[in-house]
Length: 518
Image (cartoon, rainbow, N blue to C red; front, side):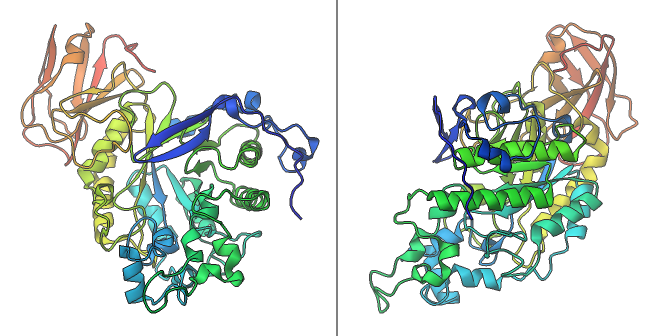
């Protein structure tokens, strides 16, 4: 039986914003739907939050997230099987497109073998969540996020309200449940991501069409079969809005998700989804999480704009932000890719240096980095992922104190590398050794040099600061660091042997500790 919410919307503004070529729509902090009927209390767990703007505007990012700085994302599901890119479930139905041609060659015509068969071919036979979680922890991750449901309307968990889930179909494994168990065993915080906004309804509209030319012209694709309606849905056009009944089921699915797996982070791929239904879910989630932590608010809500922790998809802030934020990106494509059919520059492979420099840049600006390491369909990592994780595992024990539990300094950094002011402006290549980023902890300033210095490291900000420096250390080294502090510059001399690759960190102590900790 669907929920009877008895609700109305009160909108006082809608925020639209562009993120790298696609427009996402989010309710602003003052445009959160108001719930007026008491029937909503049967859905929302008791606690301090109500589904109103005044209540949800009281949300504050928890300290654990501000301290964590680095998370790893398993953006993994049936889309990982073909190895063609980011949106296979959407693109395979496009006659003449690269995904359609590949599908026809490898699987057959989409009237006979469609995405539901791709799902059934997903076996996750090499998925070892304990080993992966241990590897991620060694690489410095403090939280692990599992993809719970993508735009393809498939639940990667033991879903009570949706038959297309990973326990009943495909691998016949509770993927989210296994990830949660492994994360907690490794001492990591656990989160889930949901991408089932309006795209969860209309994403596979093409599955309802047919070839317009060729020998099978007019033969409907698999999505036209009523037997698979619960997977493909019944959108009438590519931008069709989901009906109330589907959104009500969406809410049940997601309450089921947060109640069963009790995540400390809930990520939405856009703004607050589905109006009041999304607002109700968030209020329920925040209250449930506080109850789980003895009344302490530990929950993180990631959205692309608005009241909660803002998420920049494949992008970074161009300066330090007052509130905590997150950059979510991937080591390559969002899903595992054998090749890059659309030549998407953001799907190119990142190096360990690029990942470390991105982390330094993000943390210096009061952000967290959530990095996806794409898994093959069988659940294993490909060699380039393993190599970057190995490099992180070497770098973090030496330099992690400059990352974790830190806060921004009075300026985020210096150097020649420029970052575009908005959009998908992520680093796709390493910075230079003349680029430095600053973090602070306990009155100590950390200078992260984004490369291996080839000469003196000069920093204008420290020369102009006017505070006496007591000591300078190089993390991982016992060498004495020679430095000069002048009115217009501060310079540290190179050492004979650097303690690590990719980036080095100088630790600076001042005679006066209060120098701009935020």
